[in-house]
Length: 142
Image (tube, rainbow, N blue to C red):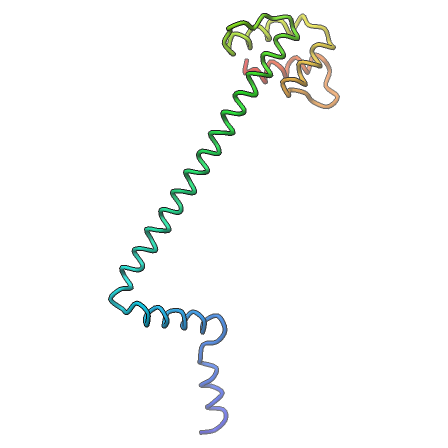
């Protein structure tokens, strides 16, 4: 057999990554046998599905925690803003506090408007007090 035939035969043999995959498949066949392969594939599929469901549940819980934390933080910022404007927060709901802040912000001094915009996170670089009032109203959802 000439050298060229040997080289063609060698070129057709799998190499590198393909060889590794073939060895893994051969090892699985030897360990489990062809009858157990479908059962093994089902088990791997079920485990993969459980892993994905667990991951999605953890992500959902993290999102809920962040949402609850943001809502709690917003309530604290609303109450702080209301106190700065001289509003009695007592046992008022957030919606009532938002409404009173929106009413009082128009008559508040420019210094108070700047402070309230910072507390509520409704500020903009170089914004005038009029623009800050608009941003505050927008952040309140009015």
